[in-house]
Image (cartoon, rainbow, N blue to C red; front, top):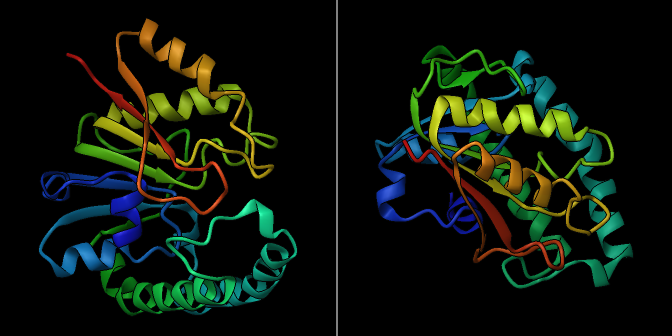
Length: 214
């Protein structure tokens, strides 16, 4: 939850909104927010799997990811997380918190199987949609058209959309950011790129904010 607050510049007022976390994966944001009586729905294709399979997938890749990060020290900023080892420890703790909530949350309809660019949710159901480490990050694999449709889909279900980060896996700003900003503005949305208080990828301290004007 603290990471999300920093990634998306979430104010106390924002935390009281009805929020949908798109591509939330095994984040603990949903669990922590519901403990505080807040309203969050998470949607991800990962939720087709049971708890044990999600844990298996996590542990099958986490050590390799941390090893890659250690091998490229100049690509990362160790301010929020102090070291690769601390990052792994935090990720494990997040997974444990998610797992402890997952079955109960699924039964309550808080973890929904779904994916971009078609979420299958009601128009304007939420006040805020957030998407972390999916859009823009995989620009080498997902087309501009996929990004355009995905952002418009989030804007369909929520009054405001925030996306973080704006970098690709190659540590460069996605080539889709600027044309998407221009297209969204032409459609009547208020769009801004804003600095936030979270940076892990070097230079990855910006989010995209999209607001419906009418």
